[in-house]
Length: 286
Length: 324
Image (cartoon, rainbow over all chains, first blue to last red; front, side, top):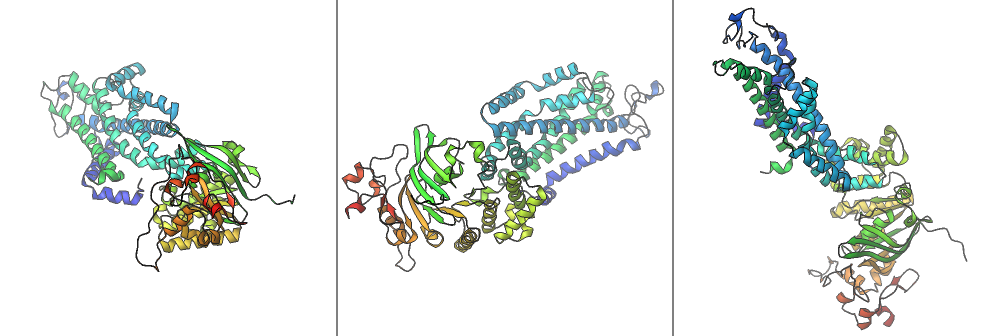
């Protein structure tokens, strides 16, 4: 594998247009999620004082209008960015750790360990993930921690396969043989020699996985399996659907949330593919 | 009987085979050689004749499908063939270490060179990181690489410097015997000469034994005391540098030497040796070189030649020499 220095990587990211678009989108939403709530005039849970405050179209007071209970939708959207991004971040982190560990152990150990772990991976890959997530989410109860766990525990199979493939090629290198000859323990070789070599690929893949995690989170919330105490974009869509926002023509209810989801997924995807291109020399030649 | 100190290395009738689907490939089939402390032995032969396998057998670093079928490998009187995988560990690197083939792949591209040298010291001698890094710096200086290079990554090193770093890694635990598996193969001639001089200097200074494996006879003449020519898993001829270069007795050795282009002569491409080394799964009866040997007679194709002493240092496995 080619060694990619960190500085070199950043330079290539700056030169890559789609990577920069992705990075800007994600940074924008991160800033909104972190600092946005400070500038809000309304609290998410604050409902309208009377019936006239419900279903308000965007106006000076409510920039994105209000929902069926008279809640400010801009506040809902900005607060929702927090949980959506948090879920994406932690769920991806979990699936990255599980996927990398299983991939490296499986690829390096070989034999029955490899067989067992890969059959489990196949199993996780084959089960339709949406019904599985729904069953798990409703079974474990709807809290944000559970949503993170459900997404993280079902999403690692792809990266496990990827890491295993990369491990198989790295473990044939002379430096691994050399380290074995020194009497290094397996964990030393797996985590000191192989992990740093597979990490660039894991990293690129993880960014792509984050896009998946966002849409999964939105889907689960849209289906009513989200955490009611943590408003997210999916939940806005859920309420909009449940209260016939579309037939009422309340486009301000569902459109901004939908656009946010699309933009974030797009941002992660652009970043992910660009990173993959930069870190994976084979793709670059094309 | 006169009492002699145990030799540094004594390989007796070593047989190393590889399991394959078609049967065992006899990569090394009855090889014997020995080495005293401070001596250098050159192991030479075509690709696939068992040089590397013989060396890996000494370090017990054979691939999973290879095994030592028979023979003894005595290093300072300890038989390495009788040790299990755990028992060999303290001996490896401490007594026998190896300069791996192809320095380009022997370094992890994402770790600093210093860390990788220190790794050997930490794993083996149990030194802490600071002391090990300090020693890694010392070792780099020993091989004439500036000390501050410890913080650099392998891709920041030139090919020759990588090879030097490889050598310093092999020296990490002060071995008594160092095995260089084609240590200069991928380098240009200038760097090759520097590396060989370095090895020669280290061998004198540290007084260690050295085995150089190569297919390039010319580099052995300058660095080695003894040369063993291998063919198809056996030693065809062994002797001092002078014996081999001036009085080569085995037709294979003669051919090998004649394959060297001579700059002072007319431009011509060396003849080469027609044919290929034999199949090692089912080697031919009689002398293994007979099918390619221009002097072979019926006896060569029927009877396996044994090692015959021509002088104190010189032995050859060939029938022809007897009849001359």
